[in-house]
Length: 383
Image (cartoon, rainbow, N blue to C red; front, side, top):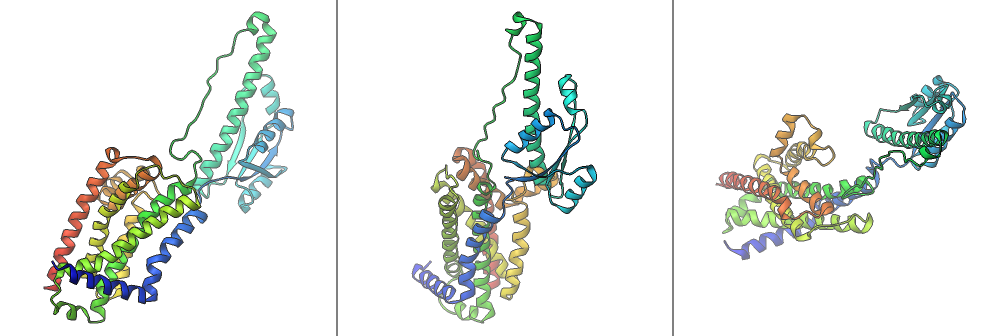
């Protein structure tokens, strides 16, 4: 293998890529756009929810419960409908995300120690938002109920005499602690996955297009009559885009830490090692696409035909454990799944090789197999 010839191919590829405006945009525009979209636009956090309050009891207890909702930073009481029809109208129009209906007799039931109910209405057109809002409302009601129960037991103990009053009421103090993402910010979950999408899309598309471009403009035959061997041509074509993919990955990591203050708790070299192993898969797949495509348009379509299913089944946006069991087994054949687990493990959890070695082994197996198959097919097509 002649490295001098490989360097010339690399130099030619770099000059040709940076000379063409479309390729320049493809190399650097998608990383920035995905970073901005998933950092600023795609946000699953529910920080404020418009709430309608229908008070059919109008007692001190119902007003106290409303104050508990208003004092939380999750809800803003924007409407006070007079009946259930007005409540339904507000939900139908999308003016509110949730509504609370306090039934008559609410305060009296609490005073007498009887079980009482309130109705929580949630707009379920967005299931994720509805689930979060319902949980917020449940927590507030549960806290209010516990406080009222404590007051009622204290009053009963005081009524029974001083000896009983000294007895403490049994209680459970629940303390929650969220690991790895204490503020539960969705961007902390998305940004590490964006690095996987970037390195996949960039290296897959550019590798396929670079080789197909030589066929399309008729220079592949000219290259093959030179002393350049097939493996030298492949390396010269793939290495520049591997470098671009790694650069874009590091760019997203640095921007995530600087712009969004996402913590990076792991070893950067470990993440880099996972990216290099993953490159064998994407470069090999790009090489394979180049053998089945005749034009750059076909290469682009084939790239998205591979990328979209792999992206949907990678666990980037949808948890794999929530998928049907046959689909969960099918995701074991998806290399993106393993690299996303590595990125999130290193990025957010600070996991080491002792935890992530199964993912590294899977990436190595897939990378070697896909690259070997693609190289064999590429050589055969050249022959």
